[in-house]
Image (cartoon, rainbow, N blue to C red; front, side):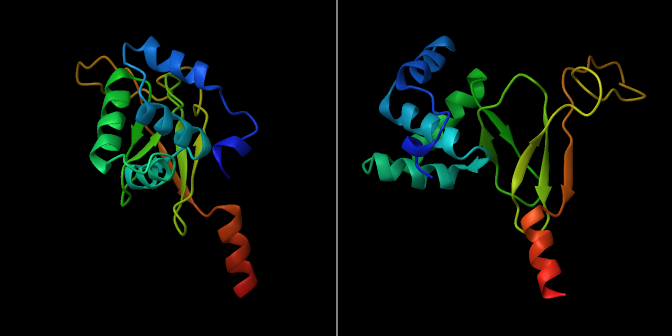
Length: 153
């Protein structure tokens, strides 16, 4: 799916506004990364570079990494690191949601907060820390992989 085909695609103006709202300058590589993350949330830096380089062929891998670093540092993008996977990036921030990962194909989907309000889970002993967030990763088989395995049986 391309950005133009994405049914709920944001306008360039609203994306630019999001970038400005965190104190960053709006650039074509930053807009291209935002568009790519809109179409493909939970993308690795390499996947985003491939998507951006189609739109902006002269953009370097380092430029995409720089954009992701600036976006993550500013809170515009969230970086998640499922075990055994490259870091993934998403635009859904600020709600302490969790993720479910397919153990076969590595598909990732959002899961709303397990129970209650953020941080969702409180440790029995916080060792004096003030808990601000909890990160939960659920692992299992996605519906496509379940169907594939069932078809092989």
